[in-house]
Length: 481
Image: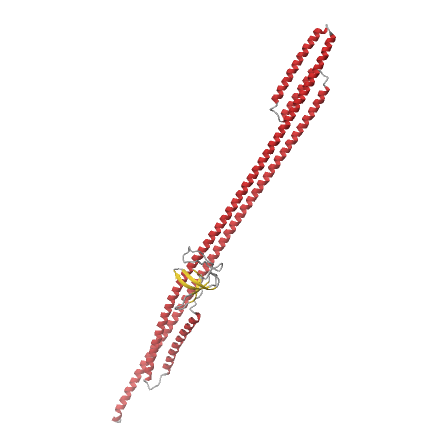
């Protein structure tokens, strides 16, 4: 039998025991919720980290692929340009070689033509000398024949003189002087007339001698002797006249030969003059062609240089534009990361508050805690400490690195960046000769010294894709755009 004094106490204990059981259930429920939230937070953070990593890997792969494509395109363009220059040089060399061969062939043909003309002139001269020797020989033979026939009758001497004259005229006409045949024929006709007249006179004398033979034979003989002497004198006169005519013809032939030689010399001089003029004209044309080629080459080099400068400026503008886009994308990524980090921090704070509530709830129990709850609280505290350590590590790395971005294939990349400070850039393009720098922001302003690869500059201002800088280190102008 129970004492009624203890009934209230017992019921109070039962009530306290019931409250304790309810608190334990609530604590377990809160513990499970905390575990679920912590697990969800860890899974969310892991997914975000994996997504960020995959995004970064894709961006790096795209940038690497684009850089490889740009490098391949540049290499191919350079190879095509070098091949085109080699082809043009080979074509020019081939044209020059053909021109030289043509000039050599023309020169050889000219030499052959001159040699052929000289050979023909020598043959003509030898033929002329042979004909003159033959004519002289024939003249000597005729002179000998005439000497042997001096004592012949006047008729025979006249016929011989006429025959010699005709032979001389025929030989000279066959050699070169057809124009003098008429004169020789006229003289031959005069000689024939003289012959006929002599024959008529002789016939008259013979008739007279025949008539007077009966009267005075001696007188006839004297007259015949006188007639013979007269005929001999006439024959001698005819011979001298024929010799004089032959001498005149010889002189005329010599004058004609001299005139022919002078004409040939004048023709040769004119040909040499024409050849010299042609050579001078050809030399002038070659000089003009060489000058035109030189001007064309200079113009091509100037255009290539200008085109190269324009391409470099376009590359710089594209690189600056790309850099600006990459900075904007990086800024957006940083904002997204900061937002995710803020949400994660909020989740951590919520977890801490939840753990504080759990701790307060557990402290209501006899000052003792369940080992599972202690482990859970310790895990949450370790996760919070780890998160804070990661944030502190990132902040310290950022401070030590000065906000350095990874280098990209652009003309310049940020070397340092901080709030309230001017940006500095490192030049990574223009490895062959540097990048183009101008005195003003307009592309029409004069060019300055090129900015070498590896130089570090400080940003003074920016307008669109144009950057005004001041040189900090490296080779290049002190200021420019």
